[in-house]
Length: 257
Length: 257
Image (cartoon, rainbow over the protein chains, first blue to last red):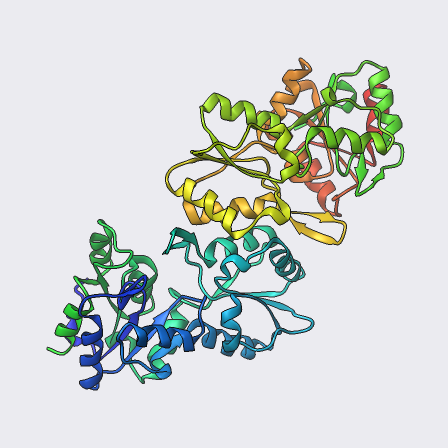
């Protein structure tokens, strides 16, 4: 399979953590690269499986780190989940981080579904039990992400996927994944900017969820050697038909060439 | 496959919850049946995946419900785990219910393995993270049970298996199961009474973990129509070469016939 060249892309989806910043530091050249994309009128959206923060806080953090962004630039899993749950006509039990509640409907009095995000220390036995009882009665299960872990301030931390696995194992229910690498999520972001997946480049640091996931969904993809990138990922990405670049800066050079 | 008849068995392993009692009530005839086994000098052991209570409390509860039992009658997963971890030369992080600590070694200062039991509300995000970090560094993983859920006082509750699944998914480590249906656990109980698995009858209310698990391990098995027994289990048990009886009372009749 010969991938199109990066310069063939007419739109871009950018992962946030590991592409724009890492921890609490902007990656070198990333803010300038994003500004150049915008100045060139190149269509893009920022996408992320992070579910500890509402869209408002994601934009605030990016702004604090020197990125010029607004709420419209970001497509969160919470907003996509809201649409999916509304379409399904369900009333979810919200097993999510309290900070995320501002992006979600009110907690239903008699929930018949479960929405799970990265609730961090709010994953308690009591709350997991409540979710489990809804699922074993046949309730629908929505997961904002199924990521295994991420690098936090004090070391590796369990991400939402671990708790999705716990509830799936115990209840026999299968979660519908809202975030990456769900094709629906990539497509919703592309739809917002009127982009054709075949000429939209997904840029990420996670070879599985970002890069191979996007290609599976019919997108072009590029892996950056930053964030959670590890030796060996480069070969995996190339085998899958993706590009590999040092950074967002390098990719923007090519996109605007 | 024609199973031996129950009266061919020369020893018995009895599950506790669902065979001797349910919730806080002794099952009809169970205390008398156990007393008859003992009076007849018929070798038996009580086995259980419960890991919320130490052996002392298991014996206390049985005594309170009218069963004549002593600590030697019970083989717990904790004691089998201690032997396994000692043989492996590991220092475990103890992700268990505090009540179980009296049956386990002291928490190691620098653990290189994880022992997981049904910690109930003591499954916190912080503790799960600590366990996860040991496992992702290559630490060995021991699970007292992998049961999905059980019927508690206020409804169904998540059992240890859900949290085993969470840590396995996130870390890629695979837990070594200590309790049922691990063949090692059945065999250790049989070894204690000098019994041959081929003529030892496992009696339980869980068609998968108790009955099919025991047969898989080379034992005879009987399912009782009590505890978590559900319509359909009877056929599953018989297909697997097991006997089915109304209760322990009925089985003891046959064992002593």
